[in-house]
Length: 129
Image 1 (spheres, rainbow, N blue to C red):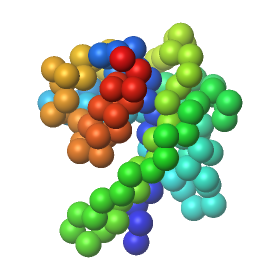
Image 2 (spheres, helix red, strand yellow):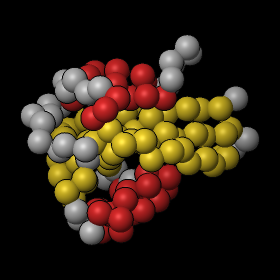
Image 3 (cartoon, rainbow, N blue to C red):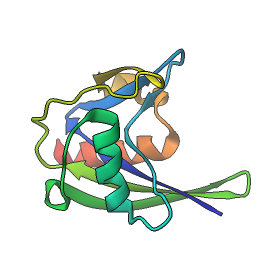
Image 4 (cartoon, rainbow, N blue to C red):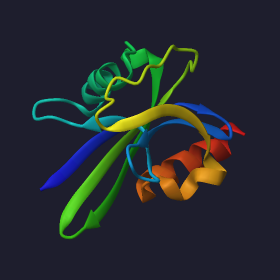
């Protein structure tokens, strides 16, 4: 089984736009699970709308490729995309999962992100600085 997800990087170095999880010292990027029959990009477009009420299209993002890891015999695939134009009015829609949507200094908050997300963010911050 492969656990596939798509994630959106919204960067303004050294800041990254992320959700603060309810009751946890954890941050999550915008995005979610790739459903059966969906491409990773289609999943991203759907998840961005569901989580932050933003309509994006394929030409609004740069495909950064996928990262893989295996944990407890489950293979995880994370497909990363970077938003070209960060000037959007993002909203927090899923208030049952997240406290807020906020700009966080990645270098201060790095450990609050999952490992694959840390790696993807760090690579892009190096390129964008």
